[in-house]
Image (cartoon, rainbow, N blue to C red; front, side):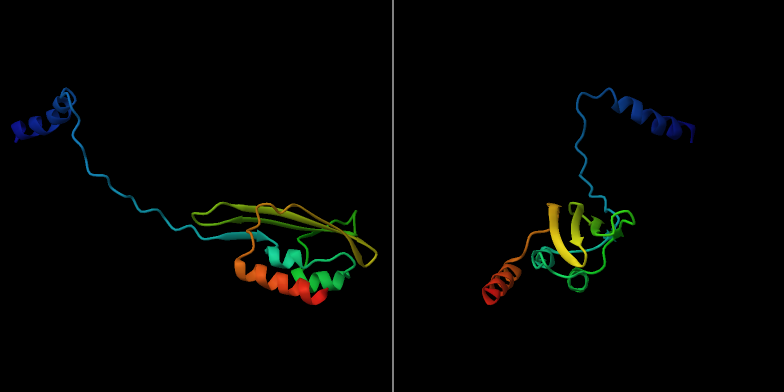
Length: 135
């Protein structure tokens, strides 16, 4: 029993002196699933592209929903803020700022929506058709 224990404990030390390291098979370690997390207003480009200057607050709310933030010091500014963490995909962070004069939409700041996913071909077609019917 003592000889067996001596052999087992000496193997790691003796293998350290060997000139080559044996190749071990690569093991794929499974990763845990991480659920998608959406925080804030979830928008898509199709809805954002439908926003038009001159719309009322009610029309905007019906189209893209209630804003994430209505600043009490700037009642005429609505902010749609989102931070989404997606499983095995890039995070999505954006900020859409809408400014109103009274009840009318006067400014759409889309500079913060670069990480919003692009339109699919089907939605581009729908958007193009919508533009043709309004002209």
